[in-house]
Image (tube, rainbow, N blue to C red; front, side, top):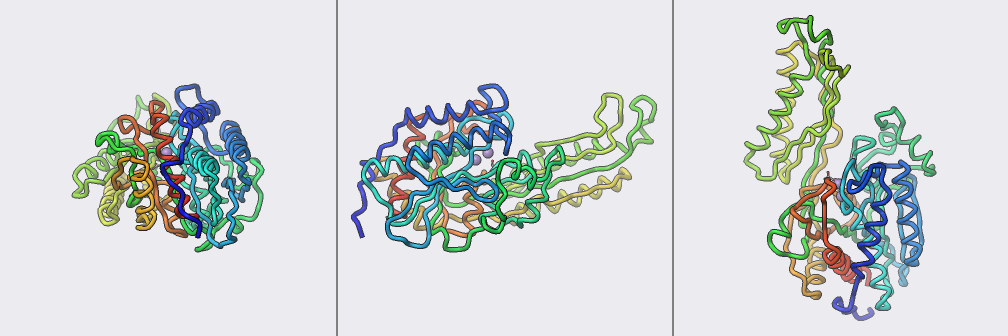
Length: 419
Ligand code: GLV
Ligand code: MN
Ligand code: MN
């Protein structure tokens, strides 16, 4: 086996990485400083072209699968089965920042370049992946690309998802130029020997503790639901209060109850959010006939999450009964958590220490593509600090050096895993 390279010799050009992050942020459907890049919109397609151009410039072979997951492939020298994967996503929720996901994709390409610069040749093939639609913005469910790869989403169900305009996922991917058979995308266990994702922390821990690197030990379990109350519309002036079947009031009550349950939970990691709400017909002077909203509930403890969800379902039915409404409480996703692989965590820790970077183990409360890659490969994640813990906002920030630190640790980790 060739000698392990010296991780301290790996350098990522922080200025160049920042310039690429800034260049990608230009592809947005809303004005700066916010970034909006929704799946298969013009901004997303332009961002994809840019990422592919960076992959090609780094000498990587570019491949795309049935749903537009993009792979920058660096062929290994040993012909071994089981690639080493890294990567993240470049789609961005409405009015997001520049760094969420992007650091893992552009940092992955930078890591490959850093390894090339010291003459490293991987024995195992290394893939830098840009996953399709990690964010749930367009089709309502997150991690479409990695769910399909990891076998966590049935291809027929994915194809049938529709966006707010009634366009199916299948029609959208075809319009974007992706038409291969879905089955060809799904991975088999063993296709990846390891997967490690670099990402911004999106929380305050590393910055608060003055640390450079988070070694993710587990990813919390996300769940989301679509809830609809259906009542009776009518004139806001003429229908007296006692006769109303207003659909919005119970939606508001359930939103408050979700907050109450998460705040009162024994688990410190319980969180619950109503992030979208549509009221029909939606006029100042009209009683809401339907109210449809999303519920996002997460926890590191499945039992705690389950308790909150069950209580919310019960309360939704009670509210509907009390107010003579119909209620539909539909599951969008209920995913288990994932543990990181002990060897990958050790590889990240040793890589950070060799570069004199300070690290700690940390739980990811956000979900990531790594959650679904963990179903088919040993998984790890590397976090870098987020200023004030802010994310999913235009003022999200990670400094050029912090990003470069993460990419350097990623490079050293990939070298260990692919050597
Ligand atoms: C990912 O964007 C998440 O919502 O955790
Ligand atoms: Mn995100
Ligand atoms: Mn992300």
